Amino acid sequence: MAGRALPAQGRAGSARAGDRQQRRGGRCAEARPGRRVLARVLHDPTTLAANLPSAGPPGSVAAAADGSIAAFVPARRALSWQLTDPQGVAVVRERYWLTFQPGEVRVCGSCHGLSELDQAGAGQPQNTPQALVERINGFMAEETFSGIRKRKGQAVTYDLRALVLAIHHEAQPEPGWHRLTMLLRSEPNATGRPDAVLKALALDDKLARIDRLGCTFAESA
Image 1 (cartoon, rainbow, N blue to C red):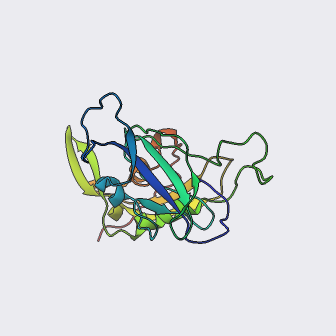
Image 2: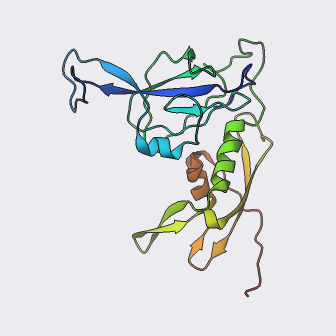
Image 3: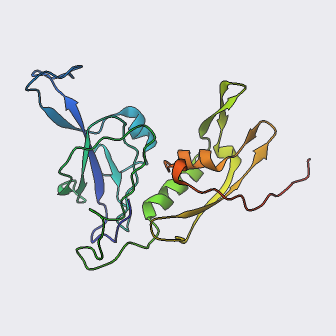
């Protein structure tokens, strides 16, 4: 989610998941009439492990200096979120429950979209979302990153990170789009694919245009 510069550092986006709770605690497998969905701090272990570390409240991701946020969230769960101050106190609360499907990517250039100008009198954000840059840097800082591909109908696990030499974010070719340039490696048993990198960065490869610009050959040792 793109954004504008924040007046204070240390803000975070804190997510809430809707759980069906029994009277004495514990989660209901099936909802019964009159049962209320209660908001709980995001606690899905797979989701928490996929997001970058945050010094904010539990279940939160850090808001970058430009106000942008990038986060993994669990699929097929009622979700809501809020923007907090450096002390973890809610400043802006989402007023609706939303649900995402597996693999779905939502992008918001500014809250509620723009007809012409936003509440501050500015147009569509043109800055590079710092949260996207931080996610790229986080991927490149990993020593290994497991990918899965099909070989003869069987799922094979490989190290995707070892096949990615560089990723750079360039200027936006047009509003709402971003251009990434990648330098990928091809080995006898595995090939770095841009669509696999996009999935690793939680970017929707179905909405991407991929252009192969060149191929560099190296002499064998």
